[in-house]
View 1 (cartoon, helix red, strand yellow):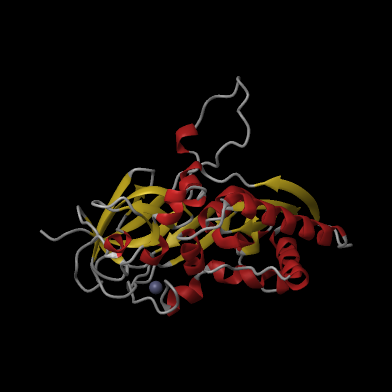
View 2 (view 1 turned 90 degrees about the horizontal axis):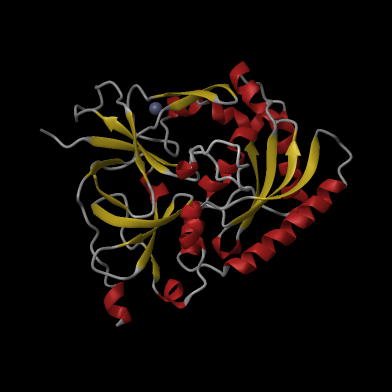
Length: 338
Ligand SMILES: [Zn+2]
């Protein structure tokens, strides 16, 4: 019998958004415990036969506070995660890579990269042609937001209406504010490009930078003040845009409870005892307890030490792992502190 191998698709924040206000007493209590939850999504790789087996089923590991995650990396390099077909605002299919090919472009092979609908999203507002399902997705209302990450790096971004909250959770924002609601995905991307051009805000903050910042973050109060100021400047900029198709809003994003400990670092222990995870995730055995999660970055504890580590679980994407009672070596950083 061989160990079950899984292809890692990544960390997903797909549960219901946490309620921003107490529900009316008459409303049924629904999904409260699921609100703001995250999972590590895995696809079973059935056997080791050189990739000829039909792609397997999906399984999800909940990444709650207290989850113990143990695994070993079971293959070199990355394998293609397939592609998606978008049928509408809340309807998309995942198509597995038939060849289970090595990933050549990020986490996809050349073929799946070309077939992926989401590749077309970024050219839609410049007049690019899109299939009807993707068009229906893009024509739903979208939100423009300003997000600030640990360390103060900030960006402008967009979220579809149905992913309004989730988009920021998966990005690992520490503080964020919505600044406009646009009629569709074309208008919101025109506004996004304008904010980048005129306010100098980038559209991307690299995940390695987010992970590094979480390992030595700035106090949350300063980040909130920074985000408030940037959002105010962007609203001012938007107020001078003569075109229609959007409305300016001033609405905070609610950070998930699961991310609190990773983002909140006011305290001596958090500052002194937090380190980047010292082992590369492309080989070897790993095991730790997840105590908090911001985007794809876990605040994790290792058995045998009181130190906290920031593990960028996003680095597992497209890697093949075997789950089990594995543990990470306690790094030498401990001895250097005592
Ligand atoms: Zn592929």
